[in-house]
Image 1 (cartoon, rainbow, N blue to C red):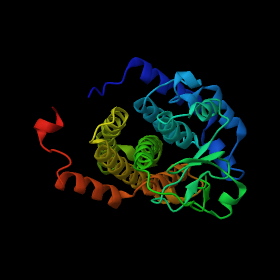
Image 2: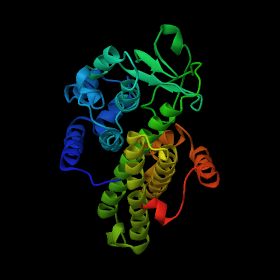
Image 3: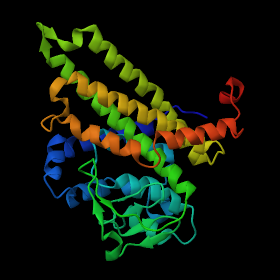
Length: 328
């Protein structure tokens, strides 16, 4: 498995990062938090960039790119704490629907930004962004009706809108794709929190010097950076394995979810500590990313769930372990 990112992939990620840096900064997050937390202009900007059609086949008006490309963009969505439900629609639902017959019309609508897909699975007690969705995807695709979102709930993340679950069966493919993209977003969230903590450590002074000069702070930030570096390739492996339909893909996704969730949790704690007593307050922008990391870590299987899947795969013999198999 070749995990070297191509110049085209890196350029795509850089272009999305540049766009979101100019349109989705902390000031926008605070405006959305004040309500309403959805802005049609933001969604239209994503549509104008062609991002909803990233994984839609070219025959349906999309770009026809793969899950690794989508994961790279999901990282950027996490980095800027994107409020709009781009990832669920474009990077989870679209690849799944692309493999089903007679899906050309809905895929074309996704690519054009006219269709938004909410995701339903028994593992998640609440559905995100059902109220603004045109369809919801469980074991099958269904149109959203007004009665589907009669009950709503507040999320720990103020930019996530949750509705009561809809009756649906297990869909392992949906679970794996959604867990993968949650992991990718967690990488971006963690990178943003680490950058905020590093920047603050350079400007906050104590005893006549920046706190970043103290070994204790350096070690905390270095440990956080190492955790992130170990998590990132796990996400790339999972994306490629799922794209290629490998039998090891579910275990790779669980590994990615655990690694990314652990890194984000650790970095959130470190960033709060570096910011000192202000770390928990609303006045510090960090809290948006911290809350997003909590929500994503719990969504689509928490640590215990994915650890159990890994245990079952390894102990049950579903995965051959050892360097001969890992690097063959």
